[in-house]
Every structure is written in structure tokens, then in C-alpha cells.
Length: 115
Image (cartoon, rainbow, N blue to C red; front, side):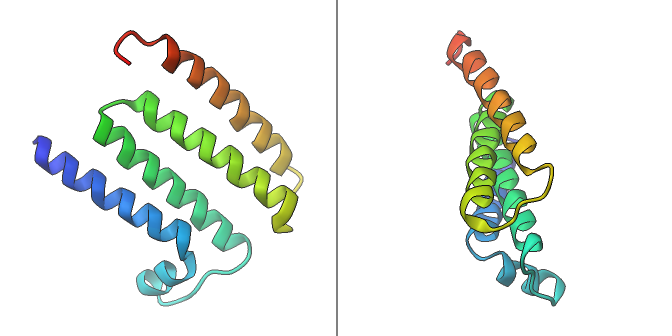
């Protein structure tokens, strides 16, 4: 069971890294069509989620996975808002919400006795 979980965690994290780095290539290999613009940004968020899922399974800690996801998504969405040119009406509220979640999860992680 443990080896299957570790193998799956590595596979999901690797797919997430690929989505983060080359989302269009991954989409074209999977679906036969590249992604552009907002689709590429959404694919990168999905990549971040897969990396966090892999990390949570590898560490056997949902808290670590959620913390990694929220910190990474906060930074990526803030980057998109400042430099990426994608600025929907909910982008900054999403950045703020993920930043709040990041702070709360970091506090919980720092207070966790098993850390």
C-alpha cells in the first residue's frame, strides 16, 4: 500500500510540474489541442494542485499539501495580476483569500506537535 501511494504521489507531482512548466504541451499530448491565455493559467493552477496533492501524499499530511497549494497559488495569482496581464474581477479577491488561508495554515502547521 505504501509503495503504491508513493508511486502515485510521484506521478501526480511530475504531471503537476509538467503542467506548471509547459501547460500547452501537456494539453496537446492529452487532448490534441494546445491551451493559451486563461486556459494556460488555469492549467498551471491545476499543476500546482497536483504538486500539492503529491506532496500531501508523500508527507502523509493534508496540512502540508494545503499549505503548499495555498502559498503557491497566492504567489502565482499575484504574479498574474501584476505582470501577467490577466485581471478578472475576482483575481485580487482570490489572491487575498488564498493569502489568508496560507497564513491560517502556516499557523496551524507551526503549532502542530507532529511537525
